[in-house]
Length: 253
Image 1: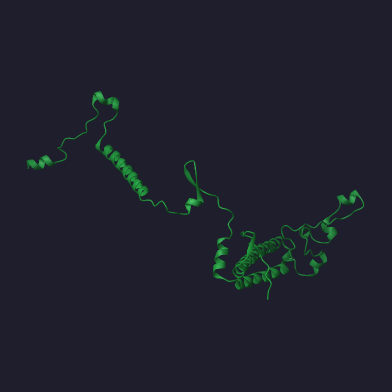
Image 2: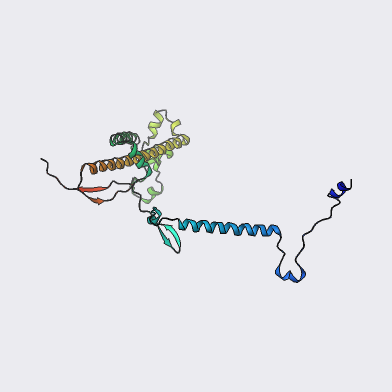
């Protein structure tokens, strides 16, 4: 029973770590074991890193080569990668050139060209961006006529259609044909939004057709280089154009 009483936590006295001695208070707080453990672990970690780097330097092959030696340079003690020049080909062009041949690329380009022509014939490029705006000048005889001039009355149409440069029906046409619902502001805005979407699709197809044409040129250039040996490079290859070579003329037998 006495041993159990001695083991009770409530009856044990607190064991406190001693503080810094009075004549050593100018040295700061007394370092405890947990503080020493952290400091020792940090010291040993740094020593192990230094020894590992020292071993790596001793085992290094002096004839070893890697591409960072030519793709980077030392500035203020720090390795900095050199600026890359303009990329010769985009990743998309490389992927298509590896997997498809020139016939397939040309077939896709012709298909895109036909779709572009169909879109152009349907849209007529009437309100395309970048097109030169038309100017319609009206002449009158006096200043009073200028002040009283009404564009809708002069064009014989409704005010909602005055700003349109195409498909502007007259009042008589609107009265004869049942297209009143189509001329409502809500329907006019819907038609304009659909037309803008069509122009956006047209611009995307034109850009795609240009890319396919560049890829076709690059594939054809590589075929020419395989067939002909003697050549002089005139212009380098870029993302938007193929390389240009000048070949020596040979007399055929």
